Length: 416
Image (tube, rainbow, N blue to C red; front, side, top):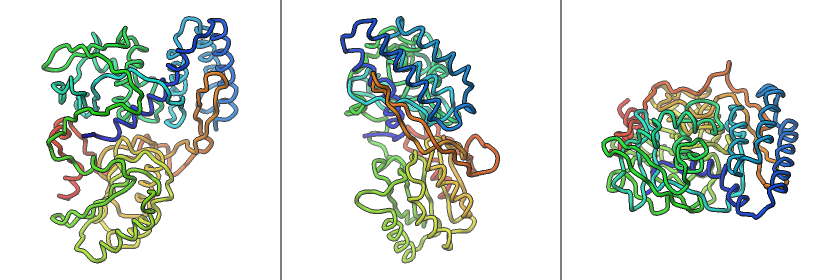
């Protein structure tokens, strides 16, 4: 059984950061040639990024950027390939734009912990584990080696491209699972093993698993196994789906991706929703954006138009659920509903800012093949510069909520 999609997405994103470096490091290259190629790549990166990234000078000064570039170049000879990649990513992360990041091609294997945590309001808890470590499910991680988990998190967040603390919280579990990231910051000396300290279980030495990031989590056991899985964790591979909760007279819509599904356009999906609601006893409608990290913000327009002009556009009848994994076009869609309907917003703050950079483009470095992702448009949707889109009712998810299969957010809406 799989768990929350945000874990796998964050692993996916930050696996991209270092997966290509392993294929590079396996190529037998003379040190002088290797250093020269890296120097050429970094110079090319510097020149191209400055000229292509919108409002570059408002994100970082020329002097600061050049100092960081020169620092990396001067250290090439003493750095492993993965350290160079992560230093470049750390530079991009310092710009505080989620969409500005590195995108190497996923080719070679990575080192993963045989467990995967999630971050809750009360700490990091193991929610996935391979067969050899299922006894660790539900345990709280307190240390990595001799380092408190808070210190580890403070280091790992330096390589996360983000706009606020909420996206960092969302992405930290994926970064934590990558042993290369832990080694980069000195929390382990060996890619093959990592020592954790767990609350109530003491120290545990974990042997890492070397596999392609696309296989991460395959065959892992879930802490939710044998339990009722909350609706928002079901069908997360589908762009959108719905269910009628008859007992509560509530129509629940899960919108996981801002895109048309191949088997059912969103327009047709909306028409089906309209037909059902018009012929059923529905008291309230819920739109769940918790697992949505973006796409095309215009796809949702048919549903917005229908609900805006329906009897549900009134106090207490229309709800939008948001969370830390809601970014990019998902935030834009939430703002559409905020500005055009009487929706009540429930959940946690979004990982994306209401105003921010988008319209992603890339360029490739000539030697390493590393893709640099940058943005060419700024979206100004609300007054001021709020850090996040905040819910009307902030409801956090605790470890025990998750482990016991509870969804306090939807429960709140159903009882409202």
